[in-house]
Amino acid sequence: MAAQTDNQWSPGRGDDKVTLMPSPVVEQLLRELHASLTLRKRPEDVARLIQDLHAAQGTALDAATEAALANAAEHSLRNLWHGYTSMLEEFARPVGAQRQLARAADLFTCVPELPGSAGDDPARIEAVIRRAGEEIGRSYGQNDFGTDRLNRVERTAAGLGAISKRQYNKRFRLLRRMEAKLARLIHEQQRREVTMTGKGALAHALPYELFAADVDSAAFIAYMTARGYMRSVFTNGRQRQVYDEVAKALFQRLRDAPERTCWHAVAYVHPTAEVLARTPEEDLTQLLVRWNRFLRQVADLLEDAWNRHPLERDTMIVRRGDDSSTWNQAAQAWNTARAHWFALLEELGRHEILDRVCPGKVPRLMAADVAYWHRMSGGGLHPDTYVWAELPLPWEVLRGEKECPRSLVEAACARHRVDPVAGAWTAPRPTAEAVPFRRTPELVHGVAVADPLMAGALRSAGVFSGKDKRAAAQEWL
Image (tube, rainbow, N blue to C red; front, side, top):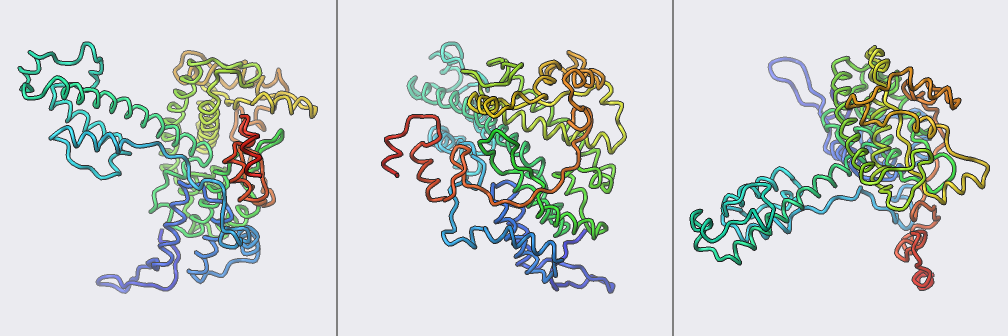
């Protein structure tokens, strides 16, 4: 489906057909919006890009969409006098193996100089390790410094007699460190993907060609993703909802032109019954397979975190030694993937799967001070925590070690007076109602600060970090 663009046409060959091609300006703006799917741009700044996109097209927006975008874009960085935010505008990227590859190129004759991008590519790093290992008679995975090294006789037999023991050891140690670095890089890249998926579903994996198939679809996806990527606020209430009045206005444009909308792309981030009903079944099946694979990947992360330090299931309050960051990232990703999986099963009519396998939701760990805040304000543990504590662990269910049918989940919900449908325990999430747009706050360790310059100073001083930084803070203040 071709993107709507301004008047730039190219004639077809041998007939009277013409092909609508995007202008350079529209193409650039679509590329910027697509790049935002892997960044953490403020929704206000994405709204401004959407305004620019429609202006470049010469598209006349309806009054509701124009007003909603104007309200959001008013607070974009381009419209603020300081044009600055203290918040990082991308997800933390793992440190690559560029330094190790450069060192390998110095020590091994078979390793060429590689571009910087190779240090972020696990496949290329592994290929270098294997190839360099052959040069010193070492196989991949032979990392024991006491038993896997070659002695003098073995080095001579392998044609390494010209290399001193010291030089041989130097090369062996480098390859051993590179394997350890590769394992860390793969793990951190996986965690980054899990974090992005938990907040923005599969937006980061959306191919540009599919994303740009329709301009209105691209605008909605980019804005929804920016909203999903917003950071959590330190509060004892609900976090800000993703679907707001700007998203509602953008989605209404898709409803008004359903034949032009790329519903497949929208299903990557917004799996409502209305969207999935308009998506071809083969595309739904592909998404179902993808989410099923991702659920298993996240279940492995949850199990690993659990095995390293089992959690207090009855309260889900952080204790000393808990890896709350890894658990909460994986828990959010699990719940997002599970919600999409449930919605796809519902649309494809495969309800019988949940009758047999209905894995539960996974709650995030709560800091002790937030739990205390809940109690002091008259609240308590969320009822979902009690349901979670009674059900088999997700990885046990996916591996078939324990049974968790729909009936078991419904019984646990009934005991704790939780609606299994409205609570999304046995059914897809209910369709969200649009909330009013609110400005993106500047956060310092989750605490909202009005001024971005002050937020940067407070963060540098370590305020709200839980550490004693009062002396440093006084210097800044």
